Picture (cartoon, rainbow, N blue to C red):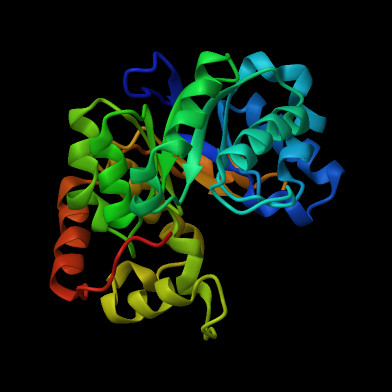
Length: 296
């Protein structure tokens, strides 16, 4: 597994990371198999959040004994069971402490603000909470997870070490809006949703389905490779995301014990040929509507 420098943090991260959102409904046994096998195969980035059900607890239960083998990222901002409103400074501090207990660790490598609006960021209190957590040794670095102009503002504050943002064949706003600004500041950059929720695999979806917006976009984009078998499309999608300048790691969520290794194998061929990458970008620029913003 290729390693890339994660901005100016000194971390060298695996190009394919693990996103913990989907393990909330998985059995402990499956999570144990999945994560230990992934670590054995070269994974060293695990990303989760306070609002992903029992994801943090499961990660802590099955991987605390291997804590020095991986970088651990989590996100905060939602009360998610703590008494008080989202983005309240006291609630935020409490959820960070709760995350450490759940993850069975004294520190995480990055705490990201989880899709925080520019309005809240401008008030300053949430940033101060993260800075105090860093000063206290609860996190090594602080970051912002989100998209659109909210993410752009967060980057331009200059206070964050890390950016987590949506980027895939159906979501490319960040390539021009935020990634250049993040690179200027030498931030570590994570791509979330790198396979566009596999939206092309659905015959139909409803507006309530998580993949709905990407499904609609792909119906209009009509990339020729979408007619290939599923694993080939996943490979192209992953390699597209990882070929984008500035992306250090792409996180894929799964609850299937062998899926991370399978996805890692698909990226082994490295970046897409420039001609193919440019064709995907050109099609996006030709078809994308003005309201095709990054998905939060």
